[in-house]
Image (tube, rainbow, N blue to C red; front, side):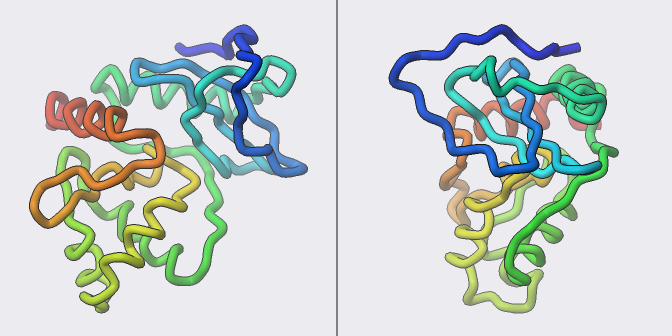
Amino acid sequence: MSTPVESMVAESTTIAPIPDGVMSAFYTFPCGTFAIGQEEDFIVSIQKVPTILGELDRPTRLTDALAQQLDEYFQGKRQQFDVPYALRGTPFQNQVWAQLCRIPYGETRSYRDVAQALGNPQACRAVGMANHRNPLMILVPCHRVIGADGSLGGYAGGIDTKQFLLELEQKYRF
């Protein structure tokens, strides 16, 4: 299992501030280091980070449980996650994020496909913006959304991470 890692702070590195009340723990996986945030009894954020801030590293049983499930995902042994999580967004963002969770492991949909599934085929750009604001990368699989032409589009964790996740899911698809 991935465990919280030691502090490796670079002098010039900055990370988005962690909101009050959110406990954050840092874990390293095959495609990078991630901060997993917990508030109360829910996972509220998964964010790829350039470095670990040891003074902010506060693992909990819940963040450790998700890290274990992510380890299993990266080993091709898990396709779904079963930790409690909370999403906070606009009504439209929440609709998009719910639709993302319906995209099967190892499959992709275009931004247009997602917009059409929501009953608003003109909302492709809005779907892209909601994807960009997804606070739970991997858990809410925004990496499975690509351009209508097959291009990867964007990804908050970087295009290289998106490509890695899509290839991983193709490799281990049941």
